[in-house]
Length: 248
Image 1 (cartoon, rainbow, N blue to C red):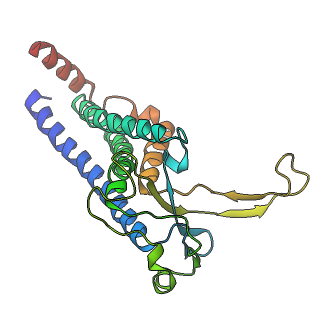
Image 2 (tube, rainbow, N blue to C red; image 1 turned 120 degrees about the horizontal axis):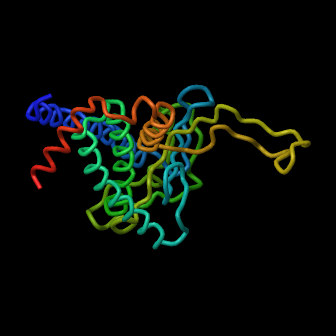
Image 3 (cartoon, one colour; image 1 turned 30 degrees about the vertical axis):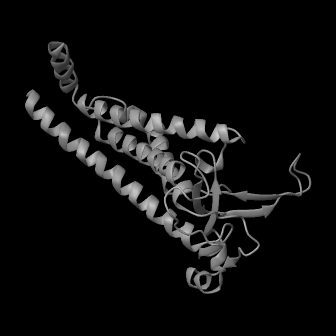
């Protein structure tokens, strides 16, 4: 493939990758803002039966509520790492495209990058633009969104506020989670070692669109790595490397 044709294709692929990132982040942020400004912390709304719910919680850590540390310093370190990772992610995504890697790999990379960026935005700005969402005795269980909007206590719901007058500082915002899929919810038999008699829930972690995008990207890479982790056109990689060497 002539170099100028490859460069043109690379620009188009990069634009498509950025479009995927933009759409995932847009959907993620729109849903988070809606949940943040309409749900009290702890509100639970049934979507499909009892196994698919919208359950509003906030976490200060990584995907699915995992934490690096309990201290504010840990939160700042984690958010700073996310910021560096996202900046590097855009660079790496462009390099993968330039070197002619498969479309599947590019899509997976775009999903992972979009998820990282979506949660990073929460950490960077939510503490600056929203009031507090304390876990409240006003939170409740609702059969539908309409029931929640009718019955919940608006004083327990966060509001937009003047920039810099929110509940936190830059890089200390809490990530908004809402998807809850307790597909299996049962009490384990007494004879089960260690956990006998305890309630077992699968899938228990509450997550968001950004978390889902990261998981889909990573799982797809792991399952289909033999198909995805190679150059779609080896000659493109050779041509690109030769062009970079000549430029030096």
